[in-house]
Length: 180
Image 1 (cartoon, rainbow, N blue to C red):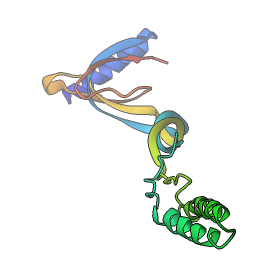
Image 2: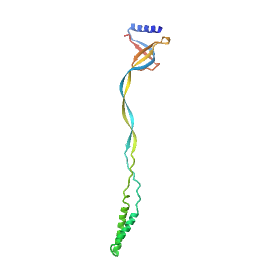
Image 3: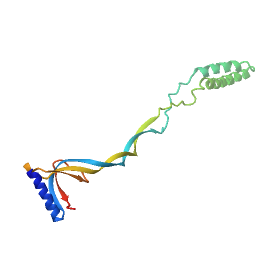
Image 4: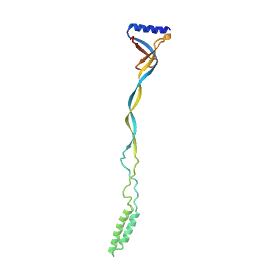
């Protein structure tokens, strides 16, 4: 009861002075009582997989050249050439047939291995980071209700005031009280 009388006396002193008074006290609790929704944006780095362009292709192992094609072609050409002409003409036709058959047999027997074969490489990927703006709706407190103990010992007096910021429990603050 004595503390209530003290607060009433303090308030009447303030009212009679018609001026602002500052009271010091310790914060008991501070919590928000009103808020508004605002859009808050921030930039984050997002990993992105990017395909790396292929610089070159490695040739596949080339097949070994066949010797069977030229041998068979040469024999066949010599056999066909020996059927033409007589004497030295027959010998010349046999040699020409053997050379032609060897060339034809090589071309036919190694037709698939004359050009290099290439292997196709699997695509390669690399991780890169890109900046991306992320926005979200957030409730932002505007007014706080702060409960303050302005007394000491047995004369504790608890006052509840609205403040624009949140105070930590146990911190000391000053409250301006207007008489108006």
